[in-house]
Image 1 (cartoon, rainbow, N blue to C red):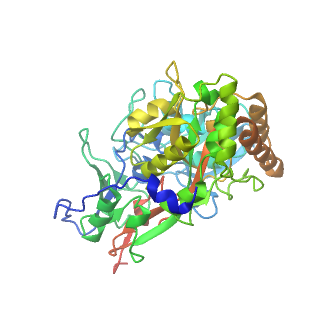
Image 2 (cartoon, one colour):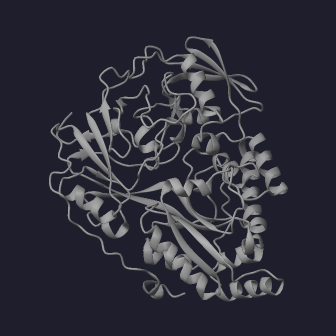
Image 3 (cartoon, rainbow, N blue to C red):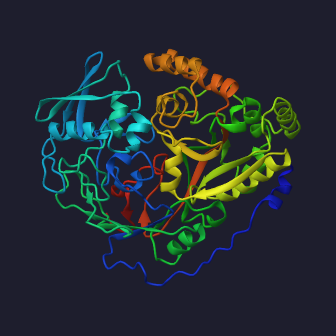
Length: 507
């Protein structure tokens, strides 16, 4: 498809730009407003590996370690030191003199309880499914500020895993999710009713350095242009996920690689159970036209689900070529063998997932129609979308494509491969013994051998399974008020520390 024909595939969207003056004015000069496209459902601490982390992670509920955004190396947070005392046991020394915002003491018992709560099967905990689906952590209190964490198999990446162990107050309900998590962080969330804006208030007794921000209010606005306008006229201080076409001011609009990779996931049902149909759907997509028409050259066409800086990235893999004629041939071949290639295939998109996401889905559907496939768009809000994304899946599971975005800022492929490609993964649609073997071998290895196994797993999946339509490594744009000093980085999409925000003209 010619890049110049892209406009014929896209739907124009009229966006209102009226902003209610004074709606979010702040009395406190150090209070800020952050306008987002997210509803932030289930902001429980054990969902902090998603966009929920923008609010809670390291602001309200802190983790044991903190990953340096540039080097990816773990640094002390609630843990001050750690060592591998046995092949399957890590001993963690905890920071002393720390209390939760509800007055509870931070100690080894609280850490043990948080770990056990994350593994509680009564909770639909995203951190467990995404990061610990195949790793069972067993805590053992050594003394008040020392804890051992053991695993069935050696885990050389435990200090990295610890950066996702967010430790909430021991008063947190063990069997139910909360919308007001309590932690040791520099901010607390006051009690709120369903539908209320999320407000974070600075805690004067925080163990670390006091942040400059005194209060942060998070408000939802679906339209990118409106989020950008709110910052421009002073109704908000930070606008998240600004679309490319709205990021027009180089003084306030900051682009950054966000660690996210987009794809469409196949359910292996109906016509999608046939690998020829899955290959055809990849061959039918003109990724360069999508990038140039809806994004820009900063967006890289993806061959695998994480960036080149992650251990296990395979540099030899190439993007799918755009070949609609070959796509038609594969579809015709499958049809002759009795595959119902004319069946309707729903494309489950998530509303306000990323800038220009909906337009991208519409353009891809047009490309599939050109090769004879019948794909229909079904937009969903996050809560509804999540019901289709995570196991256990409802039966019967229909043939469908699911719009997804995945971040891996943790330095290692294991945080992606088990979750999405292993037969036991929380978001896997298939089981392939050879792919399972390669992933398991990688997890048991270290160094160059570990990288090699993950590279083989990536290549095998793309060639022999074809579980998805790979799209782009993503770039985010953020509009930041000129009264703030703040620079987003690669982890900002899932963790935005308010403590990093300063005010211009102040020390």
